[in-house]
Amino acid sequence: MRIAVFGTGYVGLVQGSVLAEVGHDVLCVDVDASKVEGLKAGRIPIYEPGLEDIVRKNHAEGRLNFTTDAAEAVKHGRIQFIAVGTPPDEDGSADLKYVLAVAATIAEHMEEPKVVVTKSTVPVGTADKVRAKIVEVLGARGRSDLHFDVVSNPEFLKEGAAVADCMRPDRIVIGTSDPESEELLREVYAPFSRNRDKLIVMDVRSAELTKYAANCMLATKISFMNEMANLAERLGADIEMVRQGIGSDQRIGYHFIYPGAGYGGSCFPKDVKALIHTAREVGFEPKVLQAVEDRNEEQKSVIFDKIVAHYGSDLRGRTFALWGLSFKPQTDDMREAASRVVMEALWKAGAKVQAFDPEAMEEAQRIYGDRDDLMLCGTKEATLRDADALVVMTEWQAFRAPDFDLLKEKLKSAVIFDGRNLYEPARMARRGFAYYAIGRGLTE
Ligand code: UGA
Image 1 (cartoon, rainbow, N blue to C red):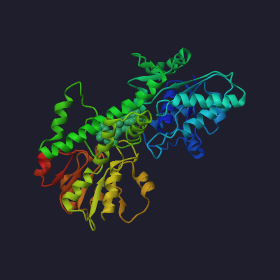
Image 2 (cartoon, helix red, strand yellow):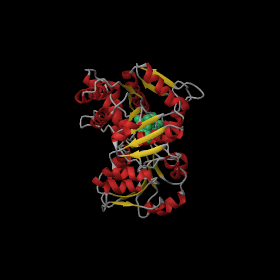
Image 3 (cartoon, rainbow, N blue to C red):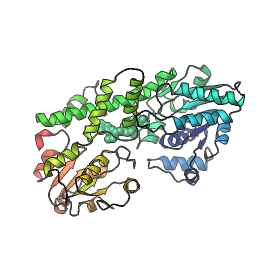
Image 4 (cartoon, rainbow, N blue to C red):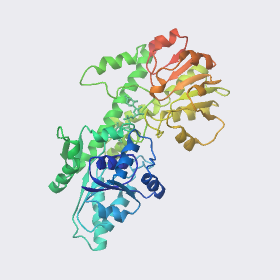
């Protein structure tokens, strides 16, 4: 099948290369010429396990190509995926300008029937707006005779496991009421549904809401657990025990009940805000979603609050080693990362930060540039020199079993603030550390 993908961000690039991997003929289009040139040369703008290999291989074998020429892409694909960004507006709603611009481009250049598929996370009702835009442009061209359909096909991949998620999806949601579009998308996704039918076909609006409902449910689980963790601390209970105690109930499950320093990334914070906005637009006050969002905002400061509780609010002259800058492991993405909230609060209170992350160093440099109160270190050990305490913000494997003797030797005092509950409090106490984690009240 000949497929065009608009947007070579996370979703577009991963989806495009995975579709090429199973044999489709994919042309990815992006407005950023240097990005397109880089991709042609096998340079991947993001860190994502397995992505580089699959892009290079499929490009070399001719099934995956890149262009800045939108007209060529429209001509190429029977199916047109829209996978461009939907950044949040100031009021939290998703900004559709890129999505609608692509819709207009498709309508400008199409000469035969097209199935337009929205893959970006877009608010309920967007397919209708895309449809209206295409109708408008086709009308202006005098080509209202051209047939097209707009399908919602939300993406559920996780950063850090994006290729694997796309190759082996739990489900594929297709929102369309047009049997012909359904049949085409069944053909596109047949290679991913070989053992069982993973396609769930529904109306467009339900598909659009499914995406938000899934992310908001996961965010709710996390905020709920963070609330329990904060409560556990005050009640002298250990949230890690509670987590195991409830996760073993299959109705609850072990996934996404890890307490921590708050959820970050490009999806949960944005999608929760966007759904709150959507709800208000239709005159409905979303109480649970608002609480999920509020809890998360506060949670991102919990580690800083513990630092202040230990040292007082004036942190001038203090230096903190910080492990983990990305919003989660296996990515260099620092969007909405809790590390940023902590780091910025430390700076405001006069402290210096010596940070290390296995992948996000360049990203940190890009975001913060050169400043006196941030030293980006080449190794996790290098952050420790003359630091008052260690702050752990991301659960990278490399941080799970550090050399605690070395930590004690290098740090000015044996103090650890752990935003991801990586270590055992009792053991840390025996080793002589003051160890502050999330929701482990028995141990402080
Ligand atoms: C999330 C969803 O998991 C994907 O299914 C979805 O497709 C994607 O958003 C999207 O909409 O594009 P992602 O943002 O890559 O994926 O990352 P997650 O693994 O979901 O983690 C999000 C945040 O929640 C991270 O900051 C992580 O540290 C935090 N988290 C996760 C917890 O604090 N506790 C948990 O138990 C799990």
